Length: 247
Image (cartoon, rainbow, N blue to C red; front, side, top):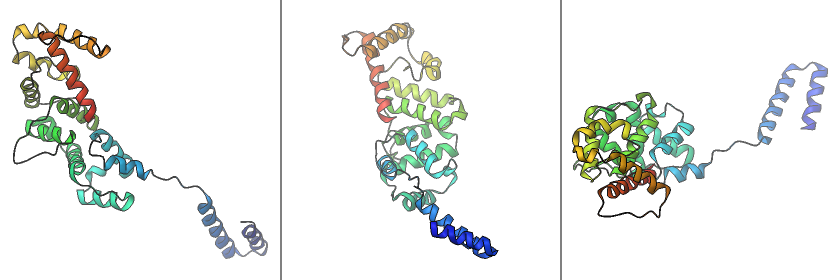
């Protein structure tokens, strides 16, 4: 670097502007080579995109960071090529299905409006590949995770779901023996679930939620398997806990 500085001074002294520009270019190149480069954590990226249990929310945030916030406007082939060329990641299986679902949610409101699309997205977000030949139903944990993830990816929707989707969520929960709105979904589904259960069950909601809070604050609390309030509270705990595994 010292020799280049001396040559630059000489070029200035004799008025050789071309030589001045040439030496400045050399100095800039050498300086850039010596400057520590900020490196993308490829190991971290591979850990997420190759982990079939990685949450859809984290994958969405990662793709925003590494590909730019408009990545979902690209064709899937372009996304695959970019991830392979830049990070050596080959999308396949569950996480490819998950990224396709995320991309679809970014491009369409259908998962908020159509019960079938909600079902398929819930499966994909829950690391269970959607099957278009046979209708699989997501678990309560997958349903809760799906709603959370949809709201994370599409905050512009302000948690607005169609009546069909809300009814379908209620049916899925009822089919799994959950007759009280899980706390994570309460604001969205409580009015609809109110219409689908008996008055005697609804009258127990407050007591069930009190028991739920006691259970999550004290894991050793006794559960009476013959008590409807305890049973419902425990099912809420299991559903909410399962959603955290997926999210």
